[in-house]
Image 1 (cartoon, rainbow, N blue to C red):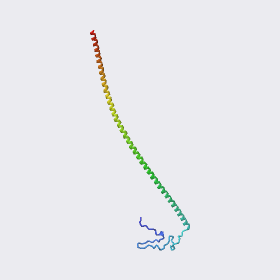
Image 2 (image 1 turned 30 degrees about the vertical axis):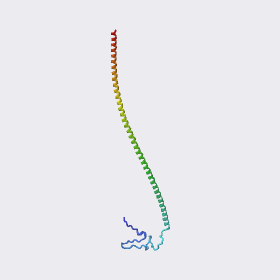
Image 3 (image 1 turned 90 degrees about the vertical axis):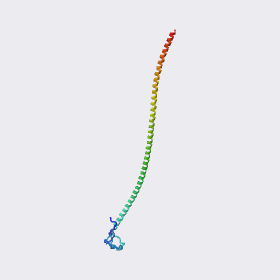
Image 4 (image 1 turned 135 degrees about the horizontal axis):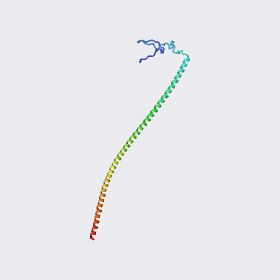
Amino acid sequence: MNPHRELNPQLFGAPTQSVEPGKLAADPRVPVSSVMGSPAEEPNRRVPYAPVDVKALEANLANLRGSVLGMEKRTETLAFKMEELARTVHARLERFSQAIVRVEDSQNKSHQESAQKFAMVAAKVNERKISDMKIQELVDRHNSIIRNFENRLLSMQRLVSEQEMSLHNAQAALDEARNEISRLKR
């Protein structure tokens, strides 16, 4: 791309002359031929266009201006709507992000509460197991003491039975001896 752009001199009615380096260009104060090719000696002379063409051109220009104004209004309306939509979307996203933060906080609190409750239940279960084990030990010890007591009671009952038998035998022997003594005394 050429950074030095030049306008086409023919567009403005300038003669097509190539200016060599070192030479001066044509004097802009000197009148040149107009676009239509007629001499430009009269500066206030109008361009010879048909009046219908100018009116049609002006009507087209007016229509184009109206279209441009309508497009500008539409563009402004669309820009306003886009800004409003952007604000609404931003507000919604902000509300959603706040709701997500609240839900995450709630979930974290619920998780912590559940973990604490689970830890408490686990501790109670462990305490219960320990107390059940202690109770079982006490029951086993009690049962052992009862068995020992029953064994001693049985041995005492046997001993009492034996003693009763001995006493009964002794009583019978004593009765016999008394009977014998009383018979001998007579």
